[in-house]
Image 1 (cartoon, rainbow, N blue to C red):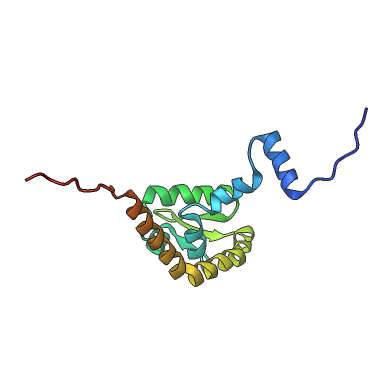
Image 2 (tube, helix red, strand yellow):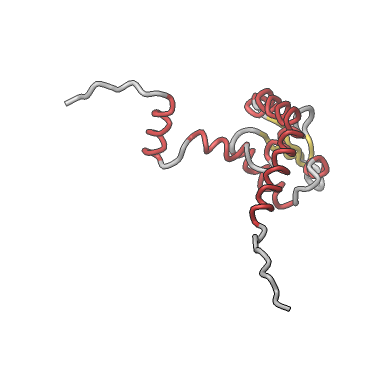
Amino acid sequence: MAMAAKTRSPAGAARQLRDEFGVCPIRNVLDRIGDKWSLLIVHALTDVPLRFGALRRAVPDISQRMLTQTLRDLQRDGLIERRVFATVPPSVEYRLTAMGKSLLKPMQGLVDWADKYQNRIRAARNGFDRTVAKEARPRFKPTPTSP
């Protein structure tokens, strides 16, 4: 007996996918581009292909191991491509794919937003930290001492 298909909201459809496959497809993508290093690497590759060493200099706080892993993840997701040149020693460069380039416009929106609100966010964090520090202080009333 066939049942009529129900119309679902986008949230309902995403929830159904998550329930059926155990993974939210949106979170799956955002986990990659929202990690600590991926957007910085994509940004570094915006204008020109770069070799590993140049990428390491462009993203100075990243370890060699983390850069290697992030490059592999971005390549696996189709955002960058790795090109090996037959030289001795072999040279390798990384460049954005068409899909990687399509990320630049939304990424720029996020960068612009972060630039616009960074001072307000910093002030909010400082205010929050001061409030939490105040609340964490022990509130003892001194007991009178006898002479």
